[in-house]
Length: 221
Image 1 (cartoon, rainbow, N blue to C red):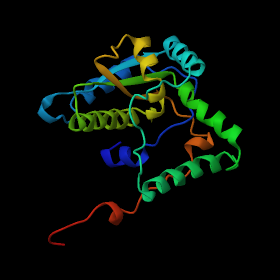
Image 2 (cartoon, one colour):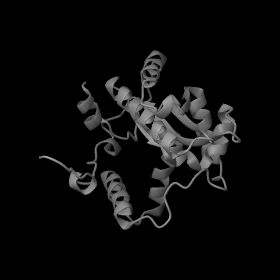
Image 3 (tube, helix red, strand yellow):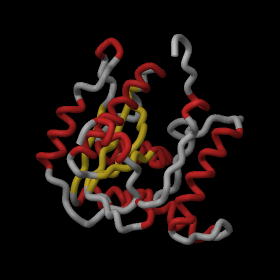
Image 4 (cartoon, rainbow, N blue to C red):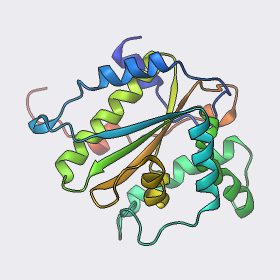
């Protein structure tokens, strides 16, 4: 698989097979991801990878817990322009339509959302933390690291789903894996495993903004 294929094939997997991930493959992926770009070579990303029973135990604790207050961070900016919320609504509608879930089925939507805290059946889970001292430039580095991890997983025939949704339980997660709430923010999880491509949650068409809406080319053409 070349880089272009990995980028185009990668998608957020929301249904995994009940099949363990080879720990050697995970170590190989994360070792390679250490070459991700990093301003000032800070390498501000910090992760904990869970497999097996710890994944299941964390899931049980998350499902039993109330969202923390205050929040770990502001997930959706206040007063965000409509073009961004429209993109969210489009992909959410496509996902729910794929499983025949009615737009007004609040209970059904709740069940689907609860799957976040089961990591969609994944057998491995990355938990990503950022030192509180780091600012927006370093958060950008963390994003590049996460993207590198996802593309490397794709290359290994594995699926992933980045899960900012877990931020509602940031302190619980930090306590579970022994990370200091005083020094670190919890950024996101990442479900990792063998994708079930027969599941409609992994087959709906993904939407993206047209290129000319987000990129301007200036210069000779």
